[in-house]
Length: 247
Image 1 (cartoon, rainbow, N blue to C red):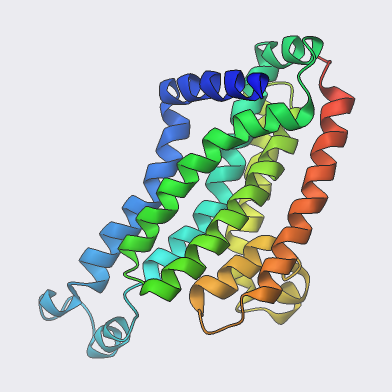
Image 2 (cartoon, rainbow, N blue to C red):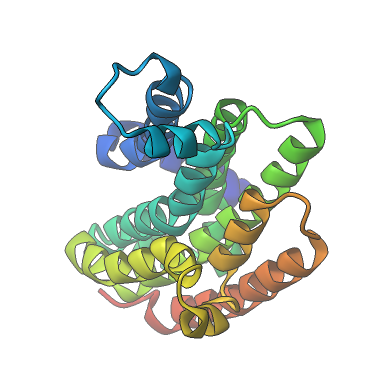
C-alpha cells in the first residue's frame, strides 16, 4: 500500500508538469462542447445560405449528445492509450522503472499507482462529457459505467505499450496506430459489416454501441469489455516481468 501511494503521488506531480498529457484530457470534451453549442445548439441561428435546407433539417434532428458520444468514444480509444503509454515509457527512459523493480515494487502496485492517477483524470473528463451530453439520470449512470470500464481497458493497453517501449518516441510510434484503430474503428464499422464482425470483439466497439443507444442492453457490452480487461491485465504482468528490469 505504501509503494502504491508513493507512486501515485509521484505520478500526480509528473502529470501536472506534463502539459501534453494533460491536454489530452481537455481537448476532446472541449471539442464536444464547442461542436454541441456552435453546431448543434445554435443551428437555428445560422445565417441563410450557409447550409442547404436539407442539411439544416438533418442537423436539427440530431440529439444533443451527438458530438459528446462521438468525442467520448474517441477519447477512450485514443487519449488514454497514448497518455498511459507515454507516462510509463518516460519512466523506462529515465530508468525510474528499473529502480522501482529493483526496490521490489510489484506489477500491480506500479500499475495501480500510475493507472490510478490517469483513471481519476478520466473520471473527471467523463463527468464533463456527461454534462455536455445532457443525459438524463439513467443515461448518465450507464454512460459513466461504460466510460470508466473502457478507461481501465485503455490504461492497461497503454501500460503494455509503455512497458514494451524503451522511450517516449517508441511509445508514440506504437500507440498511435493502435489508438487510431481503436478510436476510429467503431465508427468505420458502422459502414462496413466485415470490419464490424472483427472489431466488435474489442472494447471500444462496445463502448460505441452503448453511448449511441442507451436502450441497448448494457450487460453484454460490459462482459466483452471486462474480458478485454482480464486479457490485457495478464499481458501487462507478462510484459512487466519480461522487460521491467531492462533499459
